[in-house]
Image 1 (spheres, helix red, strand yellow):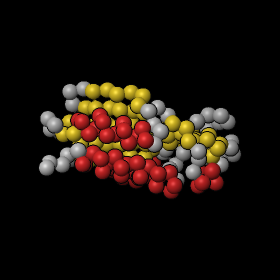
Image 2 (cartoon, one colour):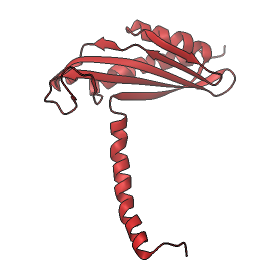
Image 3 (tube, one colour):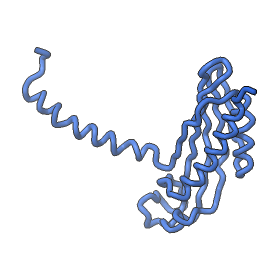
Image 4 (cartoon, helix red, strand yellow):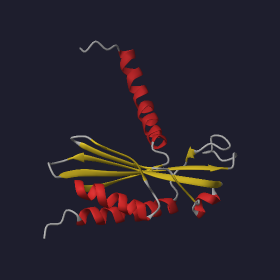
Length: 167
């Protein structure tokens, strides 16, 4: 009816689970080393003042800011930090993090805000996540890293939400 042979249908049916499995396995690898949170809605003023202020209090400096008619983009410089205890237990000797802020215009005065933290490490060459001695590589987020990021994301959310209140 649709021009498929019986062999073609069987080949498609057998290949579909493999494609789904490979797609599911590839997704975590693409985001390895990244933690992302949708903060919600925020004003232009809150994004451009509160976020740099919060990130500045924890040692991050703004490296790049871009604006278009429909979007805002802020990126910090990489900030080297001491590895968390659970990272050190995995062989991490050095760690660094940066933040990327993306906001899409939802209405004339409001943006939908998304924050991403990127994590890179250096460590012993015998660890599976380590690419080569001396090179920065991505590392899965550990429990302590996630908790640290959650604190920063929560503080930003509290500040940004406060900027949208009407009194």
